[in-house]
Image (tube, rainbow over all chains, first blue to last red; front, side, top):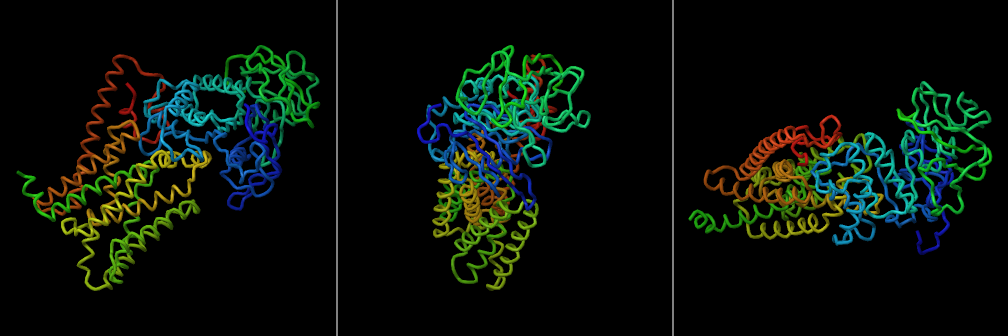
Length: 333
Length: 306
């Protein structure tokens, strides 16, 4: 996306040694990560690891106590181009105390620092319809949001964030309470946006159907970055499979023999969604998700065998690539 | 013939004008309050406004403008408390509201003779003066300018405050504006229905309207129509049946609400039957189990798409 100004080349999101305390309680300490233009990054972590706090800090809802957050190269308090950012807060419902139609809710996403006082015009209506079409909800534009299922309401919230045609889309747990049908629609919509060059940062509990889209995962633990690199399926401790965390020196039976620490792993459940075979080198058609030159490379998301050469420079050689994810039906691992 | 008699009386003309103005303004601001689930905000600010009435009486200045000033200050305080304190916010609000009520009662009593107190508690629309009418009308015009002119931004803030903040809207200023507008509406309504019932005229028409509507804009429009209808017929009723105007207006509005809920329930049931017979239900859409909305089930069922 060509933009005027000096921010070309600046990462969409730069989090530098950020510490955040809420109500005197430290939540994040020294978090450092970057989301480059065009990347799709998943933020994983157990409940209470601080991932929601981190995205709320990135969008300016919580004040930064230490370090700094930059959006498109501009540090946060000075950043004013909020029309470039689409935000999907964590919600169980899109409804409020008074009925509102899907169209009305999505329309509110068009308001920006410069246009909140204006009137609605024809281009605005077109933008609303386009955003709803992206999430497959255009036929519900006149329905009250309260009459929709949880997954459909979630898609309305995403359409609301998309209406302003953001360069950066930030979503807090967009898959919470979303039924399987909606999850797939949602994954398809995200793939389309990513192809158009939208940078996406999303908080997830597990990758699930989104796995093919994710360029990188960042795993938080106890308010710090525990892992930042090639996609891993799990970000949180699972009582049954607590040892499958990235960063553990544990090699799983179905992992490749030379799997390194930080290996993407999948619990040996009965029918995992994906079985990941690990290889050390990026063999096959690699999709470069590296920091440089990622502003809109042709992506092979969803193709048969996407090799991923990923990760920040420091960790690049230690990290494995995912080759040939074989997809099976069943619960997410 | 009927209108010839009561519209011919100057005090009734003023009463109808005041009723028209408050019938429009109160539901307009009330729609936003209900949307953000602050339906009792008007009630609280009414308590605070009483202190302003007391101040106006004791200093021999206008009680209406005293009420406006104190209610606006109270609204700003409420907004600050709401923004800062998360857990103890409701206790702080209670302090403010009861303090305002007690302070008003005290000051009015000290000003000599509490004959006036009832007029502010329950309204005295039939004794509206020309001066009152000008004050009420100009304040109400301001309220309508804010609630209709800024409806896009106010809708966004009341629908999802966090989203509006990230979108780059001046959320704090808009919240403050909404609170101040509420305070102004309370004082406008004070003369018509009294502080104890002005909140009802903000909330009840909205509650009635949303039984029948699917969209925010329609809810707001219908609520204003119901508000005007209830206010006008309440004044008429009080003239003929010699009932208190404030109580008449509120009871009529509540009757409209009951009628609307019953008819909405009937429509919803009929739609449900048609749908079940035709088997055209969209999977998952609005099924009460899968619907995380906090609406009562009957209303969810009612608002199902065809």
